[in-house]
Image 1 (cartoon, rainbow, N blue to C red):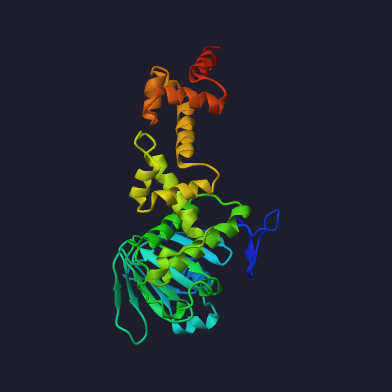
Image 2 (image 1 turned 90 degrees about the vertical axis):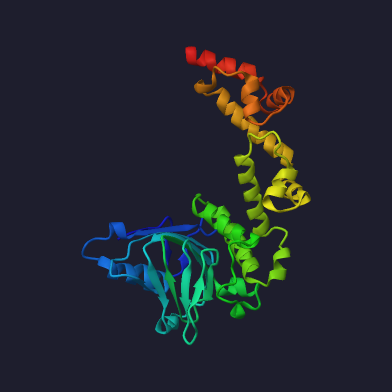
Length: 342
């Protein structure tokens, strides 16, 4: 079995960075690297019962194929996995472990959810499963991949007073707040975090989860520095990166694409001590500078390269490039070419 951690976490004691901040921990486990003598029992015991507090079993006679990565933050665990169809069983006897975390899980092909004394609830691929670990439940995951967020109950309870009454199907991925939560989870799970970032990222995830779990009327409210604003800013920057080549890119078009107001877009960048237009221009200038230093673009004119990066007016490009880098683009290109020849 393969299981690796980026920082030590023993008996609930988290490793800390140089300034005393908790460091993120990363755990990776894959059945593809299970030793023959360990088998499925080791997976179910180590990752299932000990790591997640659930019993895991395949939905067919085949062995369970499972590959998961978990990011451990203060009060938050984020997991992403590829899996063959499996049942995740939080049996009544397992609830005696005292775990009261709240989980939000989403599967590509949906879930079938069972609770004692209730009929089976079928969740389509657009709906996540949401429940506390202090009650028994069984979730059948159809694969091929799934993601989950486990959050300390104390962190959520202060934000969602009616947490005990949240229905299993409260979180709909098609709603903006849920889309932000899972997009943000995807981003932080795939990018390295420093100790200084860890607590802030955990707070962002909790804020977004609370927004998803609260009543629909709560979706219009958010903390000034909470996870919603951070996630929207990340979504904006991703939209800019994908549309940098379009000269029509503006705060208005970005706001329309993301379903938010133009003023909100401007406010988010103002909090970063910049403006939408300046951020876009800086991204374009960085792209142009890179291309001027790339031998593959040496045969193209400066105007063509600038136009490809979204600058409609060559004069604006020349002026801003020199102001940003302290050198004219033609001089930079000439210097690079002379360096190559030498």
